[in-house]
Length: 393
Image (cartoon, rainbow, N blue to C red):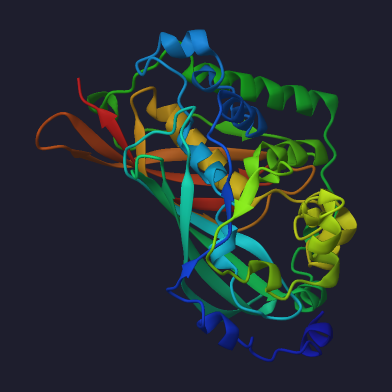
């Protein structure tokens, strides 16, 4: 392997085109129609989050909020290209990208059916460093601000894009140990299903979690997800509204995401898409096809199909929100992604309360939760801190 790595062209990435986009308002697609109840239900289903608050109108009517609201994770579904668009600017030939993390700030307004959401975008910053995955690698951060029809700012998401030369990643082969998917027995699968069902029971019956009842050092319940399949990854992708043909329209501002230097095999063909939308779809044809096609995954240096970084972020937010109960509210979350969710793997989320801070006015308090996401072998996939506001008694 050492000889192979030494032969890789390790010239620094030319970031001069990216420099032109930093700090400037960016365009892209906007959703055409208001959010529907079905959009919210489809999201909960696609994210494998059976919290009845998000799909059962009778249950929601009896809840502390009295109606179906979108989960906080749904916010990433209210833009086109989730958080990736502002983080992929400037032409760098032969490159691909993976998600490196999502940081969220939530400001209070909740998303309801009937809301019309628009997004403002900006490339925040970037840095280039050397990684064991692909040599010279760009970590670029892009901001998406979500605004409803009343002009209220719902949230800001800051996504990290890992941009790298695909040929370097193939040669360095850092995921060599992940080439083969694990083999699950029927007993194994039944055990995971039992763990999932036990987790789902933790957020039933209109649970309210009060600040005073939480203790530092308290462990959150384990959330299992998976084992992941091509079908589950496809269902996740189709839960994003912008993946539906005709659901988006371009605004008037420029952006260079489609001309970022993608490999020909991973590029959209917007001319052909005028006749057959699959050519602009991303999943069937374009940069997302590696998630569900092993051949294209290997082309970009990943051994097999893998999940979406934006969805990993949604798993985190759902995990925190489910624990927080009907009146809990995630105010901030900073998730760093270390490795993808591969086809065949299972994901296990854990969390621990590390800090409590009461509101001097006594109406609520903030708890800090450190969370981790690992696969069945204990390999770290994601981690970070989050702050959750809980009501006081």
